[in-house]
Image (cartoon, rainbow, N blue to C red):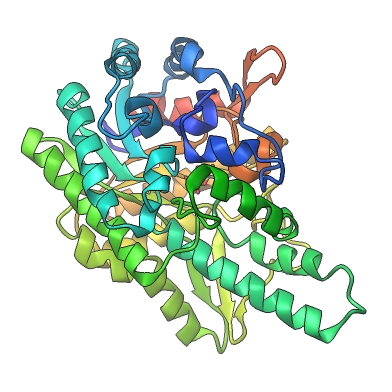
Amino acid sequence: MSLPKGFYIGAATAAHQVEGNNTGSDDWALEQLEHSEFQEPSGIACDHYHRYEEDIRLMAAAGLNAYRFSIEWARIEPEHGHFDDDEIEHYRRVIECCRQNGLEPILTLFHFTSPVWVIREGGWENEKVVDYFRDYVTYVISRLGRGLHYVVTINEANMRLQITMIMERFQRQLMAQMQGAAKAPAASDQAEETTEGQVQVGLNLKALMAGREAAAKEKAAIFGTPDPKTFVSPCTPEGDRIVMRAHEAAREAIRAFDPAIKVGLSLSLHDVQAAEGGEERADREWDDEFLHYLPYIQNDDFLGVQNYTRAVIGADGEQPVPEGCETTQMGYEFYPEGLEHVLRRVAEEFHHELFVTENGVATDDDTRRVEFIRRALQGVEAAVSDGLPVVGYTYWSLLDNFEWQKGYSMRFGLVACDRDTMERTPKESLAVLGSYIKESLV
Ligand code: BGC
């Protein structure tokens, strides 16, 4: 075991996916639509809002030393300019609880969900969001920032672009199949299978297409537009830059408060591999996912690396998972080696600390999760012993939680959560993850 002393090992969650009753957010509104794209609403989620103490204690008991979680913007600023001090107190208690239990709190300021009012104002395509985000971050950091060591501004800041590409691909496949055949009644099923597995977040493309028009009317009633620009929606190139400017504004606000806080964003990064003939496409893919963001993150203190699998790119684009290969509930290839590859590739261009802010697997077979963690951490160890500045690893996710449009059907958790009673049951994988800390101290 060669993880250095002080290396962070923990688990990650996001507010909307675990807290429950996050009623002021755009996602909540979208989940309630009659023609919702969501398989089910988030509802009470894992009731982490009330049970965070129990959850933090479970991590501490297993030996973890870090907890990555997010602050919910819609709770803090439910209406533009109205900040809620009681909600800040809630998060202050969560941070305190981490510290009392020996866990480093790794704060994420934005994890996909925005207050409804932000979306009504044009959402993530309106450059005003940069100011809105700066104001929110300034408020949060001025109250919670003291003593924090790592803050992630925006989770998977490249997600909008990834969704754009997935949607374009899906539309193209759908069109081609429809033109090719009234004889292909299951066209959308096929298109869904080949595209959905490529994005590192749960989407329900088939439902999305079917209910589109009806949903558009419902959306217009809530957001003032049939096509709300939420964070998890396709973006224009300008929208992509707006996300980066929001990050830079947040970084500035955090540094103005305390330059000792390490600031970064996180990116969803596939281990992009080229099959024969796919070299150029694979290079473009890596540029879209990572390289073109470099100018905006070069002044950060660290990068949050989030990897779940690999993407093999051939002459015709991403190749399907080969027949017979093990896949996860999300449909990805089970490929824990991807993490090490991504860390090494990123470190060639980005010369600050790397923090694995997400890596994990959705499965009902916890022995596969144990295997995934074992192989992923083996890769992290190899990277560290070669001198890469990797400082931590937070597994996604602490709990079986709300996987966005896919609802509660995907189980990433180290801890099971009974949907009726909310009872927690730690899995073997939690103890295994904790054992890495214990071993690295001897
Ligand atoms: C996101 C999480 C999500 C996870 C698994 C990441 O893209 O940050 O919110 O649950 O992947 O799909």
